[in-house]
Image (cartoon, rainbow over all chains, first blue to last red; front, top):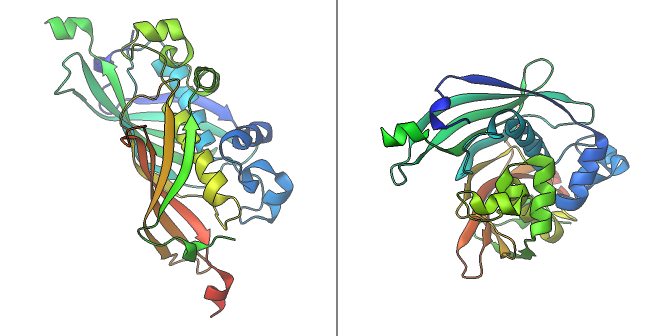
Length: 151
Length: 151
């Protein structure tokens, strides 16, 4: 079980890679972000993007899945109060293979709820050259390790 | 066609309502955010949330769909460089009926690309009492009205 105390400032976690497909871009966008450059390859070619690009919400969700599979599953995570400085550095396109990386910027116990605290990771998706394609500063709430609160 | 010039500081747009269902919470989370309080009603009851809650990425995506259906469809939108101050004010639960509202905080022509500009809307989902459940400051890029760039 991973608790607040298991996230230390400066820790860097490689969360593995995700491969973006045209099928998933179109399927996600038809439901949540039906703009032509996300849903229609022919219309996308005529758009300012010059081809199909992923909804930013899909890009963020693809990062999230890597975070859950590698760090949040089996953790004492209790959700998030929010996100800051979310940036799309370049469009995400079919065939992109993106590496997810998480860097712990800081963590602190909650002032109002002594059984938990907040971790602030910088979350990134990097392209094959290591350049950031997507980044954000997440605020993730975790319970403190039980021995730490009863000490 | 809606262009950059059609978003004026102070404009408030009612984007209609969205109803949150347990089925959609579970379906979305199984694919993108498989934490037990999003995917498993029984496990969610034992979690700090006391019941099933929506992934924050679903909440944001539900807002996005309202934004596309009411303002972005038939607009000259060219995507987004990012988002600031995204906040989850309280958990979103099955049965919630949330009203989407967009307030234009500002807009400006691009310095580097004279054919477009950036609009900054505050985006919110409000509960039945009008209290914010979700909010963010989005940065949306729109082409300028053709007559404005050739003038």
